[in-house]
Structures are given as C-alpha cells and as structure tokens.
Length: 133
Image (tube, rainbow, N blue to C red; front, side, top):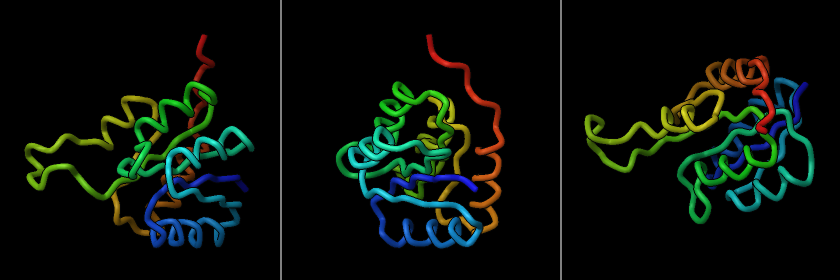
C-alpha cells in the first residue's frame, strides 16, 4: 500500500487517522507541526501527505507551499475542522482555498473513516501534476 505522512497538531486526530489507514494496510508517519512535517517530507519519500490547515507555528497552507516547491508530485489531502469565523456565510472556505493552491482534495473534520479512505484513494489515484519548470 502507500506511505502516508500525517501533519496535524491534534493527537486524537493523528491517532484516528493512523488507525484507519494502518488497518487499510498503509504505512503511516505523523508529525505535530508544519516544520516537523516539512523535515520528514524532505528526509523520506511519501506517497501522500495529509495536512491540517490550522496549526501553531507553520500553518498547513504555508507547509503545503514549501512542500510543493520541493516535491511538486506529492499529492496532498488537506483537512480542517475550524473556520476563523463562526458565521459560515462570512468565513473564508479554507479547504477550497487549499485545493486552489495545490492540494488534490480536502476533507472537513470530523470525518467518517469511509470518507477518509475514499479521499485517500482518490488522492493516490489522481493524475500526477506536471513537474514545475
């Protein structure tokens, strides 16, 4: 199966994603912030990155930008469970923004295991991006 890196500052989310993906046969590595995720991504090859948007320090959008500069072929699944505004009519849709900036797909938290597995499958099967020139 796939080698997957999870970057999320919430230990419970990391553990949940890890359990679901390992039960499906994937190898999972986790980091709790963008800087550690970036370092891991540079140190070993991964088939997929699952990246939280809202984290202290380097947030998910900044982390994604750095990773795509170094590994433009790496598919990224963005996850998030928190808008900046409580009013959904006025809050920016950060998951949609993330897909416009290079993520293959996005998934709002909380999500069901079947939705996570479907999103992972879709990202792994997505056509590869052309290399940046």
